[in-house]
Image (cartoon, rainbow, N blue to C red):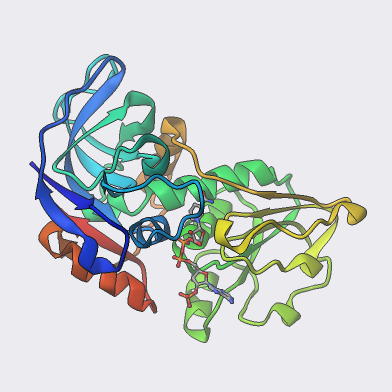
Length: 301
Ligand SMILES: NC(=O)c1ccc[n+]([C@@H]2O[C@H](COP(=O)([O-])OP(=O)(O)OC[C@H]3O[C@@H](n4cnc5c(N)ncnc54)[C@H](OP(=O)(O)O)[C@@H]3O)[C@@H](O)[C@H]2O)c1
C-alpha cells in the first residue's frame, strides 16, 4: 500500500509516496481504508522539522486527519463499511494517516457526517477538535462574550460556527478585509482586522488561534486560551485574575461525534480551498505554504 513518508526534514521535495507493508489492527483498534485527508499547519512544521527540540525524528508517515471506510471494526461497535472520520496524534503515536490503510485506537474514530463528501469530512477532525476542546475549556456561561482571534482560519472558522451553534455571543479578529464577510456570515456580531478596535477588557473569554495575544481585550477575571504553540506562552495575566493556557489538541471520539452531529444539522460547514491526489502531495504542500487560502487543502486517495 501507499504511504506519504519522509526520510529527512525539509521542503515539500522530501515527501515521498512509498510502498509499505499493510498494518494489522490490535485489540481495541480499527483498520480504516483512507479516502481523504487534509493538510494542517502541524504537518507542514513536522515535514520541515520545525516542531521543537523533543520532536520525533524521521523516517515517519505524516498526517493527522482522516476520512475513510472501516475495513475491520474489531470490538469498536462500528461495522465494516461504515464511513468514519478520525484524528491521529501523529507526533505522539507515530501513526500517520497519509496511507491507504490506517490502524487507529477505536476511541480516535467516529461515524462521518452523513452528507459530507470524504474531502469535506476530512477537513474537520484536527481543527474541529481543537476548536471544540478550546471552547469547552473556556466554558462560557449564558450572557458571556467571546472573542476569537484568527476567526477565518481553519480552527477559528470552526470555532466561530460551534460558538454560534451553542448560542455564544462572539466577535472576530481576522487578518484581511476579505475575511470580514466570512466572519459576519458565520456568526460574528462584530468583526475587525484591527486589534485596536476591540473593546478594552470587553470579553469574558478569548480564544486565540494565531498568537495575537490580544490581552487588553480580556476582562479582569476572564479566561484566555491560545493554541498557537509556536508563539509561546500567553503573557502572565494573573495580576488581573485572568486564567491563561496554551491548549494541545487530543484524540477524542466523543468530540468527533459532536462535530459530525453539528455537520449533520447544517451548523458546521467545511471549507475546501483545493483537492490534490495523493500522488501530488508535494504540490499540495506547496499550495498550503503559499497561503492566502480560502479553506483547507485536502488530499484524496
Ligand atoms: N496546540 C494545538 O493543539 C493546535 C491545534 C491546531 C492548530 N494549532 C495551531 O494553531 C494555529 C492555527 O491553525 P489553523 O489550522 O487554524 O491555521 P490557519 O488556517 O492558517 O488559520 C490561522 C488564521 O490566523 C490568521 N492570522 C494570522 N496572523 C494574523 C494576524 N496578525 N491578525 C489576524 N489574523 C491572523 C490567518 O490569516 P491569513 O489566512 O491571512 O494568514 C488565518 O486566518 C497554527 O499555528 C497551528 O499550528 C495548534
